[in-house]
Image (cartoon, rainbow, N blue to C red; front, side, top):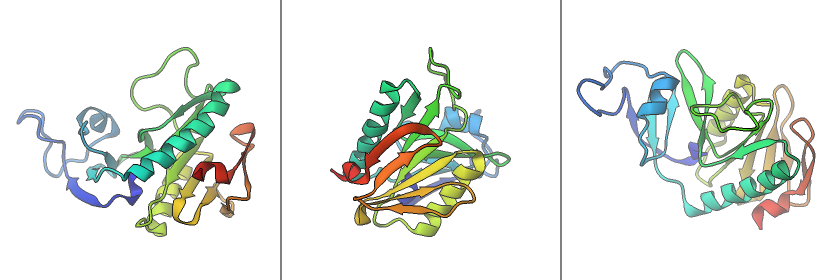
Length: 203
C-alpha cells in the first residue's frame, strides 16, 4: 500500500531508457506500457496515465503486510481456494486513462487465475485487497483508493490501521465495518469459513 508514502516525483512519460523509447512529456502511459517501463528499484504506481514514484515504506509496514499475507495465505492454501499475493502486486483499477495500484495484499480465487500456472502481466481483478495504513496517511486519500478498487470489481477491501489496532472492512454500497482487536474477522463472500481474531494481525 504505498498510499501512505509521500510522492517524490511524478513522471509525465516513461523513464528515459533511450531517446527512441522515451515517451513524449505529455503522453499518457497505458497499463501495458507501465508494466514494462516502471522502475524496478523504486516503488511506483500509475495514476491516470502518469507514473508516480514513491518513497520505500517503513519496516513496520512490511511487517504488517507479511502478517496478513501469512494469515490469509495459510488458510487459502489449506483449503485450495486460490492465490494470495503481496509486495505491491499491480491491480488495474481504471482504464482510459489507466491506473495501476500496488496492492499490499490481494486474494485471487482459482476462478480468476489458473490453478496449474502463474500468469504473466497483470492478473484479473482480485476478489480481496488489503491495504495497510501508516500514521501519516489521510483517510480521504485512503477512501479514494478503496473506491477505485471497489469500482474495478474488488468484492472486499480491508484497511489495516496499526495506530488504532483496528481493521476497516469495506464493500460496495455498504457501510464500512470497523473491527477492533477483540472482534473476529470473517470474509464469507470471498473466503468461506475463514475466521480470525483481528488481534492476530497485530501480534
